[in-house]
Image (cartoon, rainbow, N blue to C red; front, top):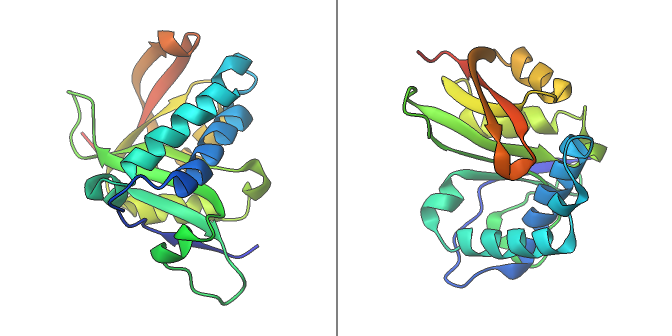
Length: 183
């Protein structure tokens, strides 16, 4: 299935339609990746509504849009531009990146990368990772019990650096930090 990777454009008003499309991938991506680890309350309608509002607000911020890459379904050969999303928000994945949030690291951090499981193995995850950080040194946090994601990141040069944390707000979900080319 053809897809395009684009950077959304900031809008002066919250874009609820596009926010809902990204939130759907965000929540469903969590369900598909962590459904065996987290309670259903992490994927319910209330979470979807909260994520929709969060994404709609983020889309009003140019710096947030600049850190985000969207994977959108396309017709073969048809170019997709950010304004097209206003009328047809068929988002199938996203990635966000920014400066690392860890005091003991510098550089980029991949904050999130989610795609719908129906697109696993299609190259979509690779395209999003490449668009978000390219070959730059970077860090990321991944669920310790997510072998598929850990394998994907390892194939892209990331390795566990020994840092581990437990997210109490996420039912004590254990995460490990993986790094590539950082000190």
